[in-house]
Image (cartoon, rainbow, N blue to C red; front, side, top):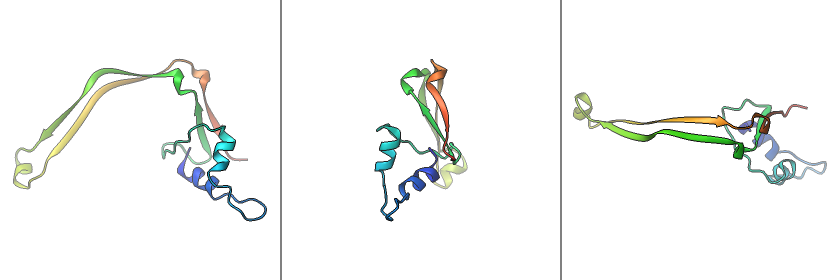
Length: 102
């Protein structure tokens, strides 16, 4: 979910001006974990069975440090950490986009 939507649910009040708090998320989502991400636009949520996906590692991640040339003079370094990965959805019907706007 978007951080904006999670904050709006956290601040949701009942008719007697009492906050529902995090309890409303567990009630609406059936105790499913809620993860916030700025990659999800406000007003939408991604709901999925993540056991129906896989992360494959093609090449182990490697780190490299460069401290040569001008970097050495300024006591700086350039760090690089990279690897080759693939993400697969085994059952597309296990994922859906939820419209949160009434």
